[in-house]
Image (tube, rainbow, N blue to C red):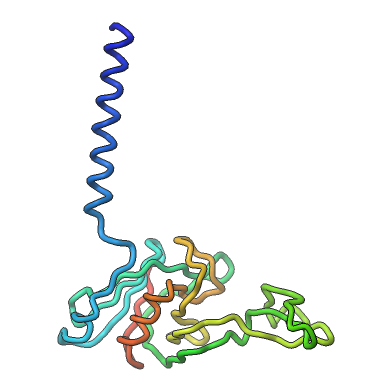
Length: 185
């Protein structure tokens, strides 16, 4: 086959692949979405399903899916436990009692970040400042959903379920205490 003809066929195939890819991306559901009208007006109780494999949280009202959020669950050694739970409590402005930073009392500068209070002793002249966990929805001991500025699409937390802030706000608003939470693979 002549090189120019071969090149044209290659370009044609490439253009078709790009068009198909763009059409797929345009029709794909957004990564995070929440239908507040459906959450407020649909009958049935709220429930949340977490897929650790997909790194997604699904919010239902009755049997109707009303929201999906990208999440980041517990990393190796801190895996988010699978099981059936219920929302045990909620706190708008929560700080971790285990993970955070040691801060100098005089300068208020971080002396040591990524502290685990069970492993790292507090240096003299410092105080502990827990990591921010706004819109905290507790469902299993100290584990819960919360807002985070760092939500990669892979397990990266100390066991909690991190969510983008705008999604954590919506889950917090529409999930009353007692809401079933199912964590699956």
